[in-house]
Amino acid sequence: MKTKSEKGAVVLIMTSLLILAALILSLGTYKSTFYQIKRAQNEVLAKQGHWRAEGAIECLFTFISETKTEPSLLSKNNSSTEYNDLKSACDITYPLENLYAKTISSASSTISYQLTYELNNEELIKKNIIPKITYGNGAIQARGNLIIDGSLNVYPDVTGDKIDDKDKCVAIKYTGAIDYRFSGSGLKTLNPEDNGPYDGYKGTCHASTKSNINISSKTDDPATSSNFLSDYIKENHYDPFEAFFQKPRSKLAEVKNEYTVISGSKLNCDDLIANAFTSSDKVWVLGNCDLGDGHSLTSLPQTPRNLVIEGGVLGIYSAVNFYGSVYHMYHHSPGLDLTTNWDGMVSANTLSSDDKKTVSHFQAGAFVPTGGLILDTPNSSTLLRGSIIFKYKRTARKEEYNNFTWQKGSWNDL
Image 1 (cartoon, rainbow, N blue to C red):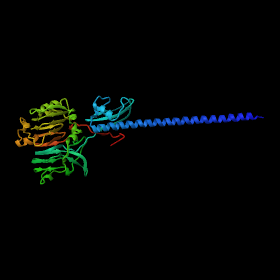
Image 2: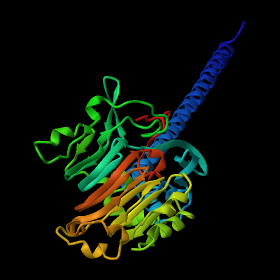
Image 3: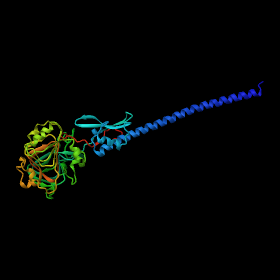
């Protein structure tokens, strides 16, 4: 027979075992709970890192879009001022963090960039951007008055919009007035060239955007202005600079730095330009330039190129197809007499004394810059004289890639 003390000991032992078991179970539960808490904390930290990476990529894209900075200046560990500005703007803790743009492809004259965020030298997010190209500004753009003396057949640009499954076409966009002086086959807009407005294009213009003018007409003359259909677009405040260069005019010096810059000449300017194009696809001419018969330009290979003429008059008197675009920029005070600019230029021999005062761009014959003719001459006139067949082909232009959009497949498709 067990004594009371023995019974008490048994009860005590059993109680202790139960408490121990409960403690063991509690410790196990605590360990599991601690693990769950730690795991949740790690997940939060991981998400915070991901959110930080996404925010940094968005910041880089915004920086490129708003500052119009060339992405190649934002490559990894670049020493440029722009790259330092980026790190400051996006609050990058270097070298713990890194944020940069990387060129990933160059095909068909198109360059794409990969935006990358790194933390501790580990890539967390990579997203691609591609150039955003706008269309529909016309085969010819004229900021200033345009005189067409003769015949002009235009294979136009397109806006991308349709009317009854046919394209809205744009022959000329202008800000001033167009004075058409009829002769020959008249002023006609035809259907765009195949692959003209862009690679892969094939289509026809809607009838409302196919002007066919066989009498002298002026856009500012109520009696004849209706002859110009919707392929002639007037925008009073249109500025072709940003449309062409994809940067605001305030960045003109930055744009010019991307070109081979040469001085113009009143004699054999075409030779100087052709020579510059042997080592560059973008040439910028300062001052007056007489292309003469333009023969030297015909020997250039059919590769995309841009020719800019700034701060002077431009003349040519021959039939030349120039594979590339021509951007003529001449800003001077209103009412300035331009006669002395034309002195000594052979191309001006058929210009009247009155025309020499007001005309800054003169073509006699059929000079066709296939990639587009942009006339940024707000206080003077352009005179195109002759019989011109203008077959617009966008790919002849060396694209200025300064506007970008997300490549399809990114988390933020636009």
